[in-house]
Length: 157
Image (cartoon, rainbow, N blue to C red; front, side, top):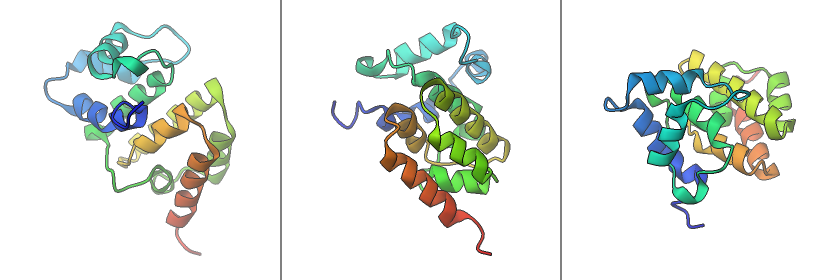
């Protein structure tokens, strides 16, 4: 898989499409409301077919990623702000971060989406590629980077 088809590399394009004026408001609303434990709405399938590289379309990780991007204000994508910093800026608790970074599979999807909702509620934009990397790889390196960025961004006591 080359760099342009890595799932995280697609995130800036997906965020841009979701905030674009041409993207249907009804589809955006359906993607915002999408539940992870129920069948996906047709808007999700249409979005994946139209905007996600065919080689990675079948990955279940797209559901929480696309929902997270859809709920962000004005796309919420800022490549200069790490996910860890965004979580700190959104006042995400250390306890919640610990549960998020220890989670796997469906629990990780659900907790990551809750984190994305808190980031959106606080109006914080960030680099959602790290969010995708967490969900697609779950590697210790990604988890460590998020935790370090979180602690670096907390106010010094």
